[in-house]
Image 1: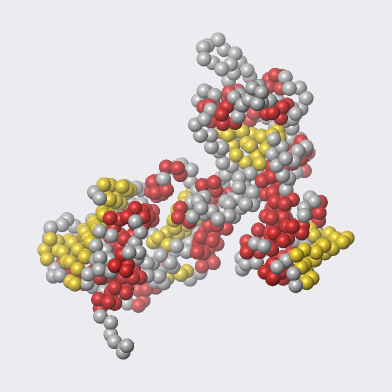
Image 2 (image 1 turned 90 degrees about the vertical axis):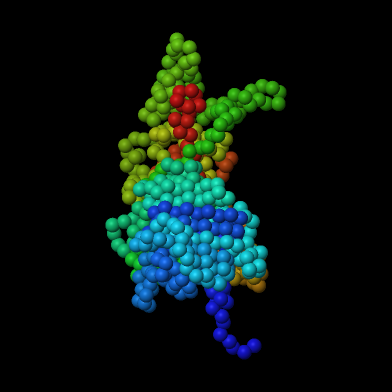
Amino acid sequence: MPICQLSQHLVNQIAAGEVVERPASVVKELLENALDAGATDIEVRIEGGGRERIEVSDNGSGIGADELLLAVSPHATSKIATADDLVDISSYGFRGEALASVGSVSRLVVVSRAATSDQGASIEVDFGAFSSVRPAAIAQGTRVEVHQLFGQVPARRKFLRSDPTEAGKVVDVIEWLALGRPGVAFRLFQHARMTLELPAVDDPQLRVEAVLGDEFKGKLLPVDLSGAGAVAIWGLIGRPEQAKASANGLRMVLNGRPISDRGLLHAMREAYRGLVEPGRTPVGFIAIDIDAREVDVNVHPAKSEVRFRQPALIHSALLRAVRSALQTANLVPNLPMGGASLGSSFGWGARRNESGGVNSNLSNDFNQHLPGDTSANAWQNASFTPHASDGDRGFEFSALRDALTAGGTLAVGGTLAVGQAQSQAHHQINSEGQLLASPRPATRFIQAGKAWLITFDADGIVIVDQHALHERVMFEQLRAKLTVGALPSQPRLVSSMISLNGEQLERLEASQELLTRLGFDVRASGPKSATIFAEPLFLVERKVDVAQMIVGWLSRERATTEDGEAVLSEVLDMMSCKAAVKAGDALSDIEIAALLQDLQCVERATNCPHGRPTAMRIPFRELERRFGRG
């Protein structure tokens, strides 16, 4: 085929393939035009998920009748004029191709009236064919209608998903743009029924909560990095337990523009490292403001991807801002109690054994940890106060709570030594260096089921997973030791051989420097084997099967990667998990006391390195409600 000049219509259709992917893409382009026109009220109407009809109306500055033809022509825009303007783009759109692209694959109707005009005008583009400009009645602003999207491009139309799916994508687009513009009202109608309403608000937090949903209302953590440097960051982020399996719950805008950036997503995940389980992504909204000259938005047809002039600066700023927000928050989650009674929730009272008697395992478990007398004298500070009034349950729960929080003689387990000498000898914590707030040190505890440590703080009863907490403690201790040198190593009296495949041997070779720092001496000794000559001393003391652990780690794809911090965290995580106390290990009072003390002395003590919580809290207010004391 000889070289020939493509027709303008075909050029527009090719451009539409990049700009107009689905109905949501059309809505995004039209909303951005409305926002660039200064609109404060925008209404969207769709039918058939947007493939049959899309209508976007706004109260912006409008388009004059003499400019309507240019507005729907390719590469015509009012937002840039010279090449120099490309380095300082503050508008959403700037290429001047959106309306032309949409008009080439649909029947497009644009009706508008400029602020300086007494009469509106309209123009129609029928799959690339332009009509003349006609007078039209309309208030100030613009209404754009898109009918039969991809109606003459069946190859594109058949790739669209179901109507509900396409409508859901439209909702996502509206919400994402609305997050960056809280002062603009947005409404969405589907088949004449309003399905989304976001009124204009002065407080951005109200808009974020409205978009994320009621489950996050009042539970989001504020992020604020402003007043210093070239980057300003504001946002609201979810607690670790609110993280989602996909990244859809995390929205970011740059200078008001919705963006998807892998570097910024990496910063968010790094900030939450060890607080959420692998494969899950935190929820929230992050708004970043920088000088427009420091970012290039002209790198993707949909303008959702950007290129920063100083990506490391933006990455570190976001990482610092989110970590600071997490540092100041108490991340011990409250235990979900549902709607069941305490008896059914915890298996108390109603649980019976096979012979019909009451199961006494729980009471026995409590009794075996009581320090001597198990009579009611141990509860004297609970202030059981009988009353003559009908319906009273015989004691004041507030007095019980006061006894607990005051560190009284309500002893149902071991007692932490809190003498002045020991307090001074124990770890001293710099509040600025403590990454996450934790429950205050307890003075009473029990071990239940050889797996759970039950204590309390100022807000409620705290149930600690002994394995998860010890795993976090060991992880942080190992990481701290690595900052000053290699871990202590112990040579084996008799070396041992392990079997490895070719891929595992490659990972072993690539990991030699890291393994040496960790106290291992493991070297390839054959085409399918390696020999262990030395191992970390603490793993020997904890009786860990080192051979099994090394084979397991080298079997993971992440055993070697460019992200050295991620590799180090993963292997330290595995070592800590193998060496930590397990569920079923009976602990002495001294061991429990030392472990609980680490809740305030260890970074990120509220979660194990895998991201699972180390503790849950039953709030006193919830107990008061359950006992009818609310």
